[in-house]
Amino acid sequence: MLNYFSGIEGFYNILLIIAAYMIGSIPTSVWIGKIFFNIDIRQHGSGNAGATNTLRVLGTVPGLVVLIVDVFKGFIAVKLALFTHLYAPETLEFFKLEILMAIGALCGHIFPVYVGFRGGKGVATLLGVGIGVHPEVTLIATGVFLLTLLTTRYVSLSSIFAAISFPLLVIFAFGPVSEPLFIFSIMIAVLLPLTHQQNISKLISGKESKMSFSKKTKRKGN
Image 1 (cartoon, one colour):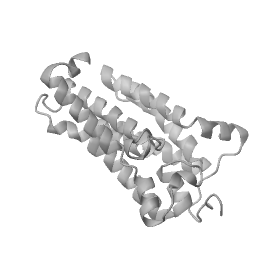
Image 2 (spheres, rainbow, N blue to C red):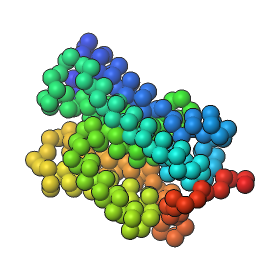
Image 3 (cartoon, rainbow, N blue to C red):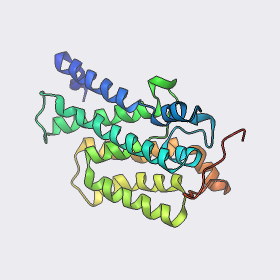
Image 4 (tube, rainbow, N blue to C red):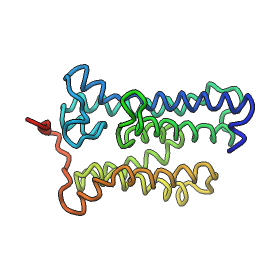
């Protein structure tokens, strides 16, 4: 992929990837918390700037808004590739650019430039970029997430299982697979567990919180 960053073509690609990063960096939960509730969501609940912590701390409606926006921003970031006139859609070159922009959006969500590079774990944004890159695999992986969530009520475990299922689905259900998609799927299976290391420790120790839609988690200090 090194040729994607050389010459005028490479400069244009870099601008698109930066744009994807900036879109991914939109800190939905942090801004909603500060604007409407006068709190920094990262200082309450689990301390994570994501939809799950927003749901637990601020309630169902803010949590759903964060979820929808974070999914949408991931999808839009990937589809910015449509603005390039360098590669025809449906070609391998175009798909490689989509993958690079997906990575940019995920990095933006996890390390958002707008709020000190301290963001969320990337689950909702990953869902959005997944829909943009490979909607069929993403739909089935979402089914794995929902089934695990209904069975265990652990969002973290559900996210990890869905992430691990992604490359397995790509390889065994939708093969043969292109090299960029294979690399992207492996990246997902590695990235999600890495961003959930604290949750994994809590799962092992039996201290991980289960999802409940009936009440909000108390904020720190309350």
